[in-house]
Structure formats: structure tokens, C-alpha cells
Image (cartoon, rainbow over the protein chains, first blue to last red):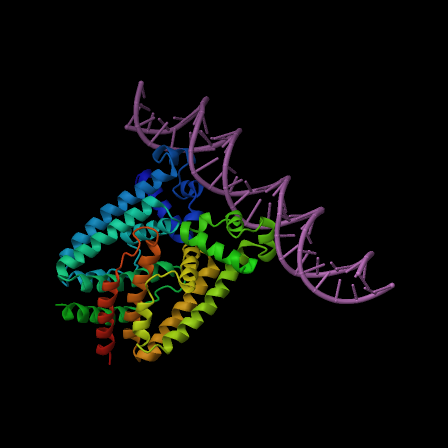
Length: 179
Length: 179
DNA sequence: AAAGGTAAACCGTCCAGCCGGTACAGTACA
DNA sequence: TGTACTGTACCGGCTGGACGGTTTACCTTT
């Protein structure tokens, strides 16, 4: 079985995604992780520590993703939009849960997300050679991502595979038009 | 002075935008609206009623905006992206505050937002005559909007006016390429 | 015009319950 | 013997909501 520490972080993420920050209480997380409250506080002495743990995990996952984006055979732009459909990957979950915290005004979460966003934009720009093109591609992906994150539990799969394919054509159009 | 009812709704919005759902307590809203807690509960007998009040206001603001979009001289696509920069309008505030609630898993807020999103997409599609083009334009605007909503209090004006202008060129490109 | 009535628009306080966190004694296992 | 917990009991602070007044505005009736 995975370590208690990881299980706790997973449970914290799940609670955040499913029901928001308010429902992600220490008691709820401990119960979901099959750990006593004392056990939870042994690993993470405060809720802030729990958030820090999540932020660190997100940072490393995002770094791996940026590397994958850089070396994707279809190019960074297509990669970014293609992977912007919410498919419940470790990165997706980490990102959405951090977004939930950021929306509550949590400073650590906000800073963590802002940093990651900037790095993604930089990575796109360095490959596409153009700030506007990079921004347009990123925004398109972000729109897709946020919509999915918002309505994840509602109408599942609001954007179909066919629509994504068509959208990728639009991405090609934007990228090729760039100087 | 504006009516207590409107002032309460405004205060509720402000609290949600500035500090998230958790900080938007009944006490805080009452204090900000310069009304006693009893007075607040007179107008809105529960927190749910407060959300309903916000949802209704959002619905009517969104309807006005769709009408403006339909008849904009520059076209619906440009209008949508142009107005996706968060500029603290009544609609912006209403939308962001409802998004905060939706992120907390609030059913009314989720449904309200989902409905509005669909209508916007329909309005874009009916003018652009193409689903994919409409979706691309909408996602671009959504990305812009969500980013702004997330980092509103952080780096103010993360997307400059010049970048918006360049982005609007990209919008033209997408729209003209459509069949 | 004075008196009386009434309903809407509030005020201030109290309460049960939940939340994060503390404290600590005990336990399984390597 | 130390590490990694469990379980329980507890606390202060905050939250949504209930509730019983009180003020204000506007009629009627006399």
C-alpha cells in the first residue's frame, strides 16, 4: 500500500475537487485517508503544511509536464491544448485542487499557480518564437481547462473528442500565421 | 442611497471576490452592507437565498450582455474577447462571485453558470455560423477571463492593452478562416 | 389634527454545532 | 528502543440561523 503521507495528500486533493475547500476539513481528510486525526497531524502538523505538501507535489508534476511539452513530436502548442482536457491525471488533480484553494484567497496556492502559469507561457513562447501566439494558444488551452474543471462533476465530457480535433486545427492555424 | 437589498448583494459579491466563499459569512456581509445581522436575515432568510439573489441578478445581466454582443458593430467574436478582460463591471463581479461559489461545489451556482455558458456559445455560433470557430473564440475569451479572475488581486493587469489588441488580430484570423 | 393601528424594515443577542488544533496515554512493529 | 501511528478528550473561536424586540412610514378613524 502507498505511504500514509501520499494517501493523505491524495485524500486532500479528492476532497477539494469533489466538494471544495470548505468540505476538505482535517477530519474528513483523515477519515478518507484511513488515518486517525492524530496520525494526520503527525505527518502534517497544520492545514498550512497540508497545502505546502500539495504545492510541492504540483511543482514537480508541472516540471515533468513542461519537459514533455518541450519534446513532444507534435509540438508544444498542440501538446498544451491536447492535454488541456481534464482527464483526471495526477497533474490535473493537483492543479484543480490548488485552483480551489487559490479561489479561496489562499496566498501559497495563488503564488504557486501564478508561478506555474508563467513558466508554461515562457515554455510556449520559447518554442513558438512569439509572445502573442504563445498567449493565444495558452488562453485557448486554459479556457478548455477551466471549463472542464468547473463543470467536471456536472455534464461529464462537455467537449467531445471531435471538437478537440477541430480545435487542434485552429491551433495549427494560429501557430502557422505567427511570424 | 441604494436599497438595503442591493447593498447586501453588492457586499456579498465583494466579499466573495476579495477573499473567497469562506470569508463571505453572514456577519461579514451584514457589516459591509451596514446592516445588522437581523436586517440581513429579514431580506434573505438564509445563505441559500443570498445565492439565489445573486444568481437572478447574474442571469439578467448576462442577458443584457448577450444582446449587446449580438448587435456589436465589430461583431460578436471581437466583442466577446474584448469584454473578457476583467474590468470590474457589474457583470464581471457577478460572474466571478458566482464562479467562487461554483468552485465550492454549490449546485445553484454551478447550474447558473453552466446555463449562461451554453447561451453564450449559442449566441456566438449563430453569428459565426460555425461551432468550432465559436468554441475557439469562446475558449480564448474564457481563458482570459479565468486567468483574470484567479489572479485579480495578485499582479493587477496581467494582460496588457497591447496584448489584447494583438489577441484580437488572432480572433479575426480564426473567424475569417472559418467556412 | 390628534390618536390609533399596522405592517414592513430593521436591531441585538443567544445558541447548537462544527473546525482547527492540543494533549497525551497507549500500541504495533522493526 | 524508536518510529509511526491510534483513540479519546478537550478547547476557543467562529458560523448559520432563530427569535423577540423596536423603529419608521403610512394609513384610518374620530
